[in-house]
Length: 264
Image (cartoon, rainbow, N blue to C red; front, side, top):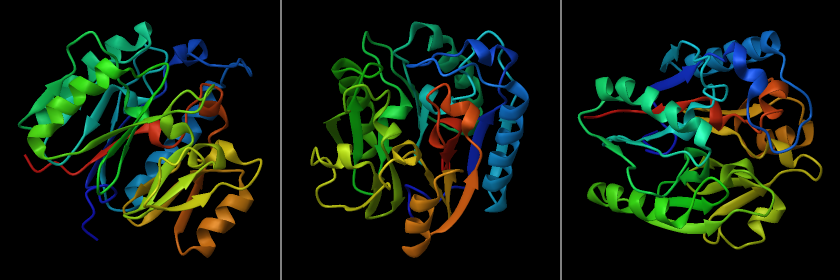
C-alpha cells in the first residue's frame, strides 16, 4: 500500500483544553464534557497507533478552545507542509502554534500569508487532486494562494461548493481509498465526485460522513451502525471511536489529527 492520500507514518494530535467548553459551534447542542472528550481522544490516538504510525500528542492550548481540531491549522504532504489561515479570527493563533512543530519535521513549510482564508477541513486530498470546498471558513483568495503554493509539488486543485449550512466540505465526505469516497447524498448530488466511486451514508446518519482512512483502517464515529455495516460489507476494516463531544463543536474524525509521511 503506497497511497499518498491514506498511507501515513506519522500523525499529530493535540489534547483537548479546559477551555473546550467555549469552542465554536454552528448550533448550540450543549457544552462538551471535557472528561468524556479526553477519553474519546485517547481512544482515537490508540487506534492510529494500532497501525504502527508514530503519533505525537501535543499539550493542550487553553488560549485556543478549538485547538484540539488540528487539521484546520495545516496540511501535511510528503513534500512539505502548508500552514493554513483559518477563517475564524479566534483560530488564527492555532496555525502559528502548529508551525514550529512542522518546521522540525519538514525541510519546507509554506504559509498562507495573504488576505484569504483556508482551513484544512475544506480540503479533501485524493490520489488525483485536492478537492477544496468553498465555505464560511475558506474563500476563493485562500484557495488561490494555496494553489500557487502547492503547484511547485505538482498537485492539482479543483474548487467545489460546500452545501449550505455545512461548516466544512469534509463534514459531508471522506476518502475511503484511491477511488472511493464516503459522502452524504446531498453533497454527492452536486456532481463534485464524478469519476469516483461513492458510498453514501445511510439515511439519517449523515453525521458520520467525516471518517478517515488511516493506513489499513477506516476510523469512524461510533453510533452509526447502518453506515458502519455498509463499509464492512464493502471490505473495509472499520474502527469506531466515540465522537459525541467533538460533534457538539462540529468536529469529526479528520479534524482531530494531521496525517502524513514526511520525506523531506
